[in-house]
Length: 97
Image (cartoon, rainbow, N blue to C red):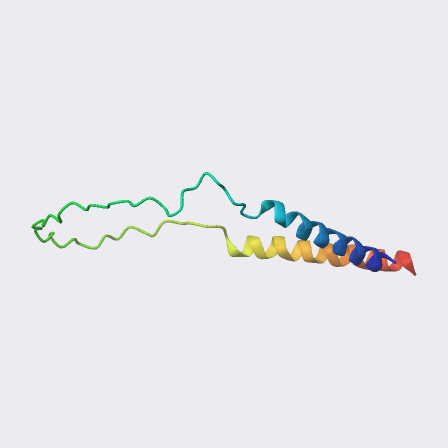
């Protein structure tokens, strides 16, 4: 009964989205000129720059910055959430029997 109701609600929502799509689509605007006005684009001349080569740098022994989250913590959180969902599913199925 629940799946049938879910599909009915999904179909109604889908039809409502399609029905309101026309209101969100582009509409004709009589204020626009046809054809579009001509625009002249001018670009400034390209300037050439003389560069001097930079002196080579010496590598530093500084450690890389620590960024992001620890992967182990994310795995633990994900595992707890999956186990909790499985536990709730098992309790729900036992209640239906």
